[in-house]
Image (cartoon, rainbow, N blue to C red; front, side, top):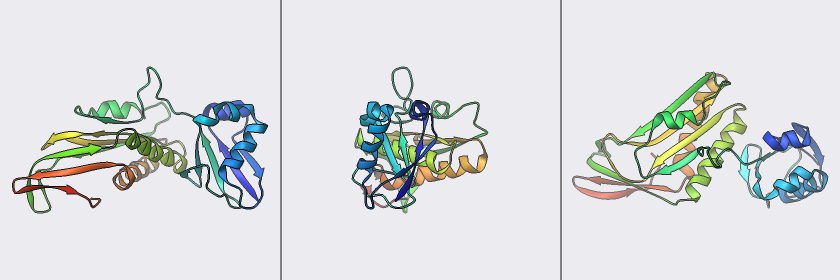
Length: 222
């Protein structure tokens, strides 16, 4: 069977190719493809432990089986090292919308779309005093990064950044900021909507609503 391998960033430059067509045995796993490329290209071997992988725009693990015509992307580490702010963050301090927007801004961005989620004073028929957010640090940021990677694959040229509060938030405070940029506005709008919807579904962040008549954890995605 044949799969298409897409390359990005430093990996693309090191191999000198944007795409590779690779023949594999039927039922081969992603890890086998990665090992094959590591033997053929020194850059793959050097970066093997730091690469993320996606199949047909979904971030996956090495044990996933591949099929005929699959599109496989190997994703080098994103900017987030010394001196560069990560794309996706948790914060116990108030969020700065402009700071999140700056993570996706660039000369190639024809449009930047933001979603700002705030604490409202009523929910499900209850008057709200405040909200409390609890997250699983480490895993939450990794899941947000996966969402940002998936958006970049689905809408080429798009960049997504996210910031989410933890702890106690008063009415009117910002709970989450999503920023998405793209060369054109339709892709920026689509990437932003995708990111907030995916965050609500898969990132380990939990919300407690503290109302005038009681408090309760919100378990449905709304």
